[in-house]
Amino acid sequence: RSPAIRFRASASTLPPCLLIVRSVVYTAVCSEPAGYSQDPERESITDTEREVLVTELESMTRSPWTCLERRIALDGDTFVVRQDKVLDPSGAPRQYTFAQAKSDFTCVVPVDERGLTCLVRQWRYAWEASSWEVPAGTLEREEEPLTGAQRELLEEAGLRARRWSLLTVLRPSASLAVNSYVYLAQGLTEHSPDREASETDMVSRWLPLDDALEAASNGRIQHSVSIAALYLAARALRSRSR
Image (cartoon, rainbow, N blue to C red; front, side):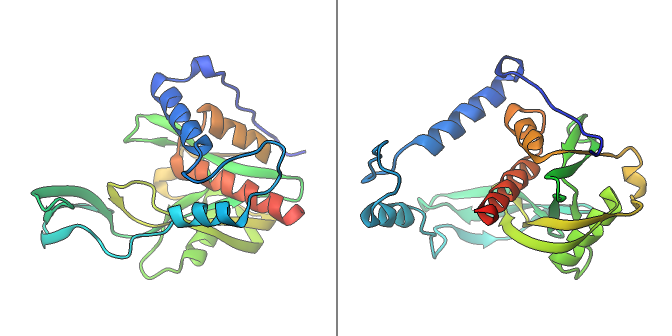
């Protein structure tokens, strides 16, 4: 068995903000939409109930916002800060400030034949804290998401994969305009990592995917895209094993 790390934290050790977030997420997941009733003795939902659920998840096709002027307030290495003049959905004028990434991101959940995954830890300067995450990074100029995912997996974790699956595309924040491509990587072989100069503090660790999910649920992993990626990978693997 590869060296593994285990994360442990009880609810009492979580910061109040995380307890609130967990409570809100639990309430949102468990709340029943209008027209939907759950019978504990029934294993499936009716076609009418399914239609209600799907209808509630329909996307808007037209923005209720009107952009009057686009303005770049700050032009950084990897992001620009925009301060646009807009009319909000009520028609009121206001300034809308948000960050826009100059490139999209990609992240990878590698899972081997034993059900182990590989996480990396690095210091996040903006957070003033270290962070356990799945291998991830910024796409290079005109780089395809899959190519970027393969490059990041090799650079950060020293891994190559024979099988790749795109799980979804995430948008991690309403105040950040960027796409994060989430991949599941299988059929792994180990190689030497080739990390950037800013990643010299990075370490990688193998652990069971279930332990990574526990770490994501108890607050030990706080990187939001990594949390979503781990759960998406676990769901995909469960679906394939049925």
